[in-house]
Image 1 (spheres, rainbow, N blue to C red):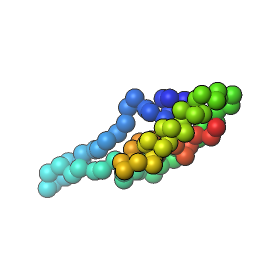
Image 2 (tube, rainbow, N blue to C red):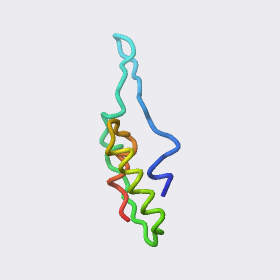
Image 3 (tube, helix red, strand yellow):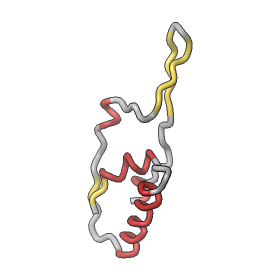
Amino acid sequence: MEEISFPTNSKIFATHKSPKGLDLQNSKKQTSQESAQTKYAFFGVRPCDLNAISIQDKVFLGGPFIDPVYERNAPVILL
């Protein structure tokens, strides 16, 4: 479950060579292939893990800075 919420690898940006030079693309602009995420369902999650997830949601989604990777991965997890 941790690998889905906090992946070890995350694409931050991409560059493409054009006649004008390098084009920098933001990671928030997802391609159609990246936008089709796999959804996950977890059964038998312990109460302490559920409590930890609720704390993570408050920290990563409810504060002044919203973590874009956590925000993108949170809706694909069903507990």
